[in-house]
Image (cartoon, rainbow, N blue to C red; front, top):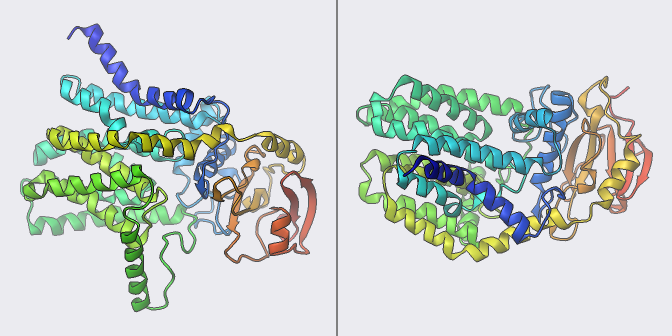
Length: 495
């Protein structure tokens, strides 16, 4: 193939996910990418919360207010970020500090990262037309790549890391104990970064130590476990120290005994089994794609390739069934990156028949994907932003970041997460989007008891909140706004 045509092919494949994403926004949603309010139908409105944390880091770094649930902060005092720690907000926030952070910047960064990591993968396989063709099909074979590119969630960063990790991982699977040390170091560093962002990727270290050997025996399994333990302990410590976790986020009820805990796990498994076929077609097809990958490798159960898929896919499946929840996009987000890595390994090992089946399944349900895409993300581009601008203007003189504050709670606004209509069953008040960047936003959920005294200096309550929770004597009215009354909490330690 002439160099010019080959270069065009490379550029086309590298930019294809970004082009498809822009086509979905411009031509399918008929939206302006710059006119976006990061909300979505569903629960918790994660894309909004991520956007705010990145915005805060881009302006004040680690010195902003708290992003927590029920005002439970992380053990690391310098980390004021939510459950997943500061790393994602710090990475995108640093880019935002350099390039600017606007309402639509997260989408642009997502496209940049995926295209950038895909360029490494395409360059590595530049001599194989077959690899290049399958690279072009990845976005269609795994729709979550496009589905979450339109958000501020960390999925695009995860996909980018997996595209990079797949290069040394496939080398390791091919060369085993002959793999170069440089390749192992690259794989180890990327695995460490990915596991800190999402601990379910600890399995990457199992894969690294398991396949860097001439033979796999029971003794080797034991040695691998011993080698992985220090990494698991270190990553667990990092995550625990920087995670503003709170009871109940794993969807397992609290228990006072081992027997009660086991019963709760059994109940969770039963709920998840009933939910396996629930949700959108995109969710259902991906679950069966995972099953198909595992079942298709049963005839090759004693090969390194089959063992790879078991180690890569089974642990996150067990986590979903035992401690998490099937449905609401949660299991799909968790499993999509693992499935992406398995798909790339199947490309490497020329499992074209299975790959064509996975692609066909997604093409058959493409209309349902488009329906789910429009339902979930179109509100980002159509919702009236008048109240957002009005609230920011109303509070610009009273909700002000204080760089000399006694503690970070003095730069924190406490809000109520609740049903807000229009499909937002449990959501943040999106109107607070453009308040002072240094102000953190913590929350509590309306159906879970949470009473004063509060740590946050500022509290926002609408009329419904006042009737449900009351107004403490410690709350000093600062401003009546379009979405409720802004109070100063005089009980906060901000003197």
